[in-house]
Length: 216
Ligand code: C5P
Image (cartoon, rainbow, N blue to C red; front, side, top):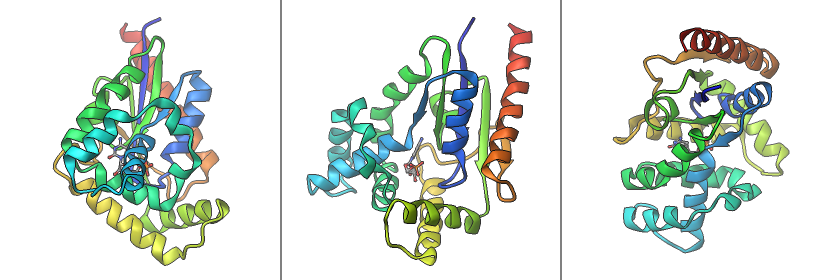
């Protein structure tokens, strides 16, 4: 059996992370949340009191990154998300993190990767591509609940403002801006429960898999 790669892209709190994890379980594939790489670079820089706009320093932090650092729950905080989107604008940082992601995508059997540029840059030949979206208010509500459950104290309005800033930065940057690949299927989860969204994603990927199997 050849390799089957699933690319799941989309903005913050669209549901793409949960969808990617569910797809990985269903299709029995390893999954990588690529946002953690950028979060880790941002957190490493902050700990070292580096300037986030310093591309060379961010590159050095990216070069130091190892897979075992990605399990740190501190990478899941609101602050880490903001740090991530600031270092993610640097083209050389993105290049430095590319090999790690492509090696993951290229493993035998295939893989699921979620992020912003998986279908466009990291795995443009992925057999199944999804771009998961939801209205900003819906995403803010979801992210607010998630952060509150993690013990963070933050208002819904602040989370909504964060989301607007991140959408603009991720979609407006020069290198690998967040956008759907031409062959991605758009999945708007605004009106869906996570179960419904995961089900819809599974059906889209099953159809892509059937097309791929019949063409090989
Ligand atoms: O997905 P998550 O919210 O963890 O991503 C954090 C930030 O990392 C994003 O806002 C984005 O700036 C950056 N990122 C990226 N490319 C990816 C994954 C994440 O630029 N493939």
